[in-house]
Structures are given as C-alpha cells and as structure tokens.
Length: 405
Ligand SMILES: *Cc1c(COP(=O)(O)O)cnc(C)c1O
Image (cartoon, rainbow, N blue to C red; front, side, top):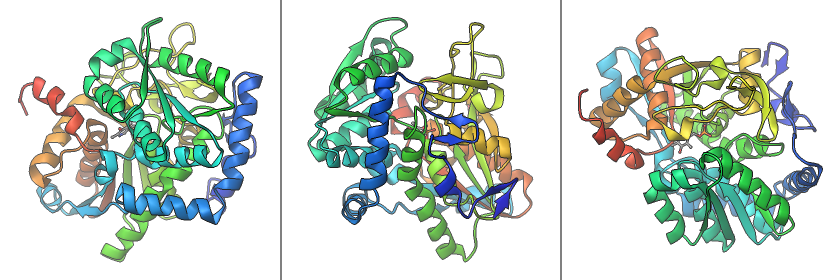
C-alpha cells in the first residue's frame, strides 16, 4: 500500500534509513564517543538479530517466560453499553510484569548478552522501565544500574522496592530538580564512562538511532500477534486500532502490525488538565520540531527552547517529546494523533474495571477512553485497543481521588 508517497510494502526496510531518520526526524545527536557506542550497537543489532539462534532464543523467552502470545479479549458489556461498534483489547496487561515494556527490555538484554556485555544501564521516571529492565537483567544474570531522581524515588516506593528485590542497583540522582531529566543526564554520563562493558537500554522508541528502530522492532510482536489473532477471531481486520503514546513504544509496536492495511490508526496523547503548556504532555499535538535526548523530533519547549515541564495523571505518558517515527507518521497522515484528558481517562479506567473485570493502567485508560469515543462516532464496525498495562500500580492514587464517578 502506498500512502502519501510512502510505500508500506517495503516500509520496515526503508524506515528508518541508514542514518536513523524517519523523514526529517530521528538521527544521532550525541558526543562523538557515544556515537561510536551507538554504531557498535547498530552493527550488533543488524548481525545478531538476524541470526536464527537469537531469534529462536527470543521466541522461547516470549513463550515460556513472558507468557506470549497475550490474548485479545472482546469487550461485550462495554460494546453493548455504547451501541453497535465492537470493542476489543489486546492484553499486554497479561504480559509478565504487567505491561508491554518487558517486550523490548528482554530484546535489549538478550542483545547485551550476545554482545558480551556485563551490565545494563538505564534511567527511570515512574519506575516502570526500571522494573522491566531489572527483571530482564535478573533473567540473564546481568548487572543492572538504574538511575532515578530522588524526588521520583520518594513517590515510587513500590517500584524502587521491586528493582532492589530483583537485584538492581538503584542510583539516586540529586542534582537539579532530581527527576527524570537529571536521571537521563546521569545515566548517559555513566554510560559514556563505561560503554565498553555495558549497554544503555532506552525505555521507549526515543533516544538516538538505533533505539527508536530497535525498540519498535522488539515491540512489533504485539501488532503482529494482534493482527493474526483478530483475523482468526473475526475473519476480518479491525476498522480502527488505538494505542496511547508517551514516548510511543507500545503504539509503535502495535501500529507496526497494521500500517500496510486499510485500517484507521489512532495514537492518543495525554491532555492532562488542559491545553496550557505545563498542564499536558501532548507533544505531537502542541510541540514543535527540536532536538533533545539525542534525537530530532517534536518537542514541548519552554521560552528558552529547553524541554518544558509536562504533566499527566499517567506518569508513563508525561514525556516532553515523542518517538521520531510518530512525528513522521503524523506528518504523512498515516496515523491520526489526538488527545484525552485526565478526567476522561479516569472514567474509562472505571468503565473497563466494572463492565469487563479488567483494571487497566491509567496510561492505557487513555486509549480505552479514545476507543469509547470512536465507538460513539462510528455507527458500526470494530475497534481494537492496545491495553498496554494493568492498573495495580495506579489503584492507591485513583482511590485517593475519592469516588465521584
Ligand atoms: C510506560 C508505559 C506507557 C508509555 O510508554 P510508551 O513508550 O509510550 O508505550 C504506556 N502504558 C504503560 C502501561 C506503561 O507502563
């Protein structure tokens, strides 16, 4: 299928190109020393990941450790409550550790093992990526250093405990505002000192090339499974697919299964408290082109052109940029990006819990809310939503809001 001049039959071969660009977005904007580390990872990825030994080991891990394939569930009560549109969810909440993030962490850590690295390094904000990577490191017997701001450490005690139980070193970052941005800086500095023995594992389809490509490829198992399962269940493709977008990894992997099909694709960003800068994290909606964290994409900027403070009820979605592939797919119009605010996502959180017996992550609830909105607008057809994770981590917060829904 050719869409606005882009040939989706050969898309995955050509996007990104050899320099790591999706159109004008992506690339490698880091020091020369780190550039050579990225080249080493890119070369290893292109050789090791094509080997049948690597592929069969990853498949075995997905089946026997992660519990893949995760199912698709038909949401009968929710669909009926809206009208004639059939809603379905792809159950990444049932992937081991309760979210999609383990899909790319297992891939990255397996690559680290094949490259002979001893240690994996990453930053974490809310702690979800840190927990997934600590899980992968424990599985492969790799050391694991997770950089985390002291402010976030206080807020995310259960995830800090999980990382420690799994044997990871949680390294406290105290400079600046002591949140995600400072944790990224510290983790990159540590990586620059030690890149011969370790590998930096980025938590989404962001950062310098090859990470937006590699993380998408590891996550594409979600979209490939979902397409096959949906065809098996219904004999057709869904009319629309929906995923939430923070950095964009669950969406990129899910969309990958449907880009070459006549399927409408929607990415949902968090509108938080509203459209004022600082109240949301909708970079594809309100951002402008810019470079941060080693790549060129869309970005929410403050008056100095630096990454602006962002907000969402879903801490996994509050990132001031989005993966370069999403910026590209937005520009060519293949994916439509829209927003859902805190209130509607919390309402969807309760709906899915009470009508279907599935407690979704508050991040995923943004996609559920948008699926419900689409189902109201469409008169018939089907919508498949990627349920990126489970909501156990969000229950205390949701209850603290009091119940007024
Ligand atoms: C981290 C997280 C997200 C957001 O990350 P993406 O890279 O945009 O997918 C979404 N859902 C859950 C459950 C998460 O933990």
